[in-house]
Image 1 (tube, helix red, strand yellow):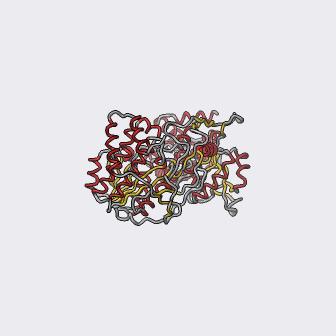
Image 2 (tube, rainbow, N blue to C red):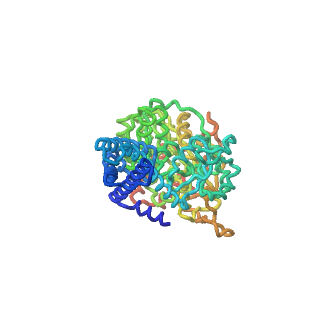
Image 3 (tube, helix red, strand yellow):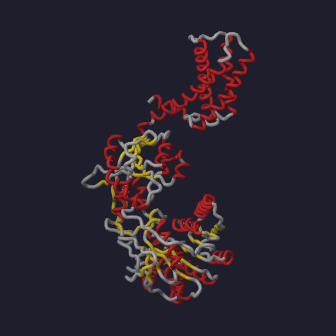
Length: 617
C-alpha cells in the first residue's frame, strides 16, 4: 500500500518537481555506477580519495547536458520502451566519449582511464533497471484493479493486443483461446493457448472479468456464433474493432473495445449480394449526410468511384464530422473525389434549389428526416413539414433538373402507422410514388426497413447506457417486437435498390422474423457480464422494468401494406408495388397542413392524416 500511495503522489507532481526527482535519481545512479566501476577495476572495496572524488562529481554532472539535449528528460517515462532505449544508448555513447576523453587528457593520479569506459556501461544498465523497476512496482501495486482478460484469438491480432496491454494498468491478459487445435497447448508471447471447451475452467481459475474477441477478419456469422456460445458464462464480452484503431489508440485501449450494437441481436447477420456499376463517375447528393444512415451512405459511396459527393446536412457539427470522416477515407484509400459539404435545411427550398442549379446532382439519396416517435407527437407540424413537404419539394427539383435517380430512405413505421412520424414518412413515400408516375426521365424509388441498431433513433445505445449505470433497463412491453438490422445492412440495401430501381416501387428486406425487444435486452445484459434481477433472483444485477407503450407506439411493426412481394436479383431484397395518392390529392393535403402550421393544432392534424388514410387509430 505504501508503494502504491507514493507512486500516485509522484504521478500528481508538477512537471518541474518530476524533473527534479528524475534528475536526482539519475545523479544518484551515476554515483553508484562510479563506485561499481572503481570496485571492479581495482578489485577491492572502494573508498575514493581526493582525485577519485573529483571524477565522481564530474561524472555526476557531465551527463546532464547530454541527456537534456538528446531528449531523455523531454518525457518522464516510467517505462523503458525500445525507442527510449535507443535514445538512452545514444546519450550514453556521447557521454562516454566525453568522460573518457577528459580522463585521458588530465590523467589524474590513482584514476584508471578505463573508468571512463566502465562507468558509462554500468550507468546504462542501472538507469534502465531503475526505470523498469519503477514500472514493475506500479503494475504490481495496481494488479488487484486489473481487468483480467481472456483473449479469444491467438493470431496476429491477438499478438498485437498482448503487446498493447503489456504495460497497461487496467487490463491483463491471463490466457488465450483459439479454435485451431494446432495452436492449443502452445504459447503466444509467453501466454498459454487453450481450447474453447476450457473457458469455464479458466474463468474460475484466473477470476476472468472480460472476454475479448481478437478476430477482426472473421465473418460476422462466425463471430455471432462465438458470441452465442459465450452467453452462458455471464462474462462481459468485448471486441477489438479494427487493428488500425487499436494500434493508433493503445494509450486509451479500454474505450476501443466494445461490441458493435448489431452483435447484440439474437439473429444471424444478413448477407448482401450484387455489384454496383451505375454510380461510377456520377455526381451524388445525400441529404441527412450527418446522420447514421446518411453518413454510412457517404462512406460506402467512396468505394463506388463516384465523381462528386454532395453532403447536405442542417447540423453544423454533424456535417463537420462526416466531412472529416470522408476526407480521412479518401486520404487512406488515395482516392480523388470532390467532396462538397452543404450546410442547409431540406425545408429551405431556395437553398436546396441553388444546390441543384449549381452542382447538378445525377443521383439523390434522401435520408433527411425526423424519426423519434414520441418527440414527433409533441412536434407534429414540424415533423410533417420536414418529412413530407420537404420530400415533395425535393422530388419537384429532381424532375426540374433532370436527376437520373432519386432514392428515398423510409421506415417500417410508415406501414399502417399509429403515429405522426410514421404517417409523415408514408406521405413522403406517396410523394415519391406520385413523382414516379409523372416523370419520364427521373427514376423515383424508395427503400423501407426496420430499426437500425446503433443509429441515432435506435434504443440499443440507451439500453447499453442503462446497463452500464446499473439499471433499470426500461422496455415498453414484454411482448413488443421489432425488425432489426445493422447500419451497414441498411445502407447496402439502399445502394443495391437504387441500382435495381425502375421507378415507383418500394424495396423491402427479408429480415427474417421480428425480434422481441426484451430478448435483445437480456442478451445485452449477459454480454455485459451481468445477471438479470428477477423476483425469484433478487441478487441479480440489472432489473428490466416495463413502462408501457408510449404515445403512437405499436406492439409490432410491418414491412409492407399488402402481401404481394416480387423477387429481385438479390434473394434477400423484394419489390412491392403499393397504392398511392395522386399528385393533386397531395397538393390539397399540403395546403390543409400549411393552414395548421401557425396554430400547431395536433388534434386537427391527426384528424386530417386519419381522413387521408395514412394514420390509423
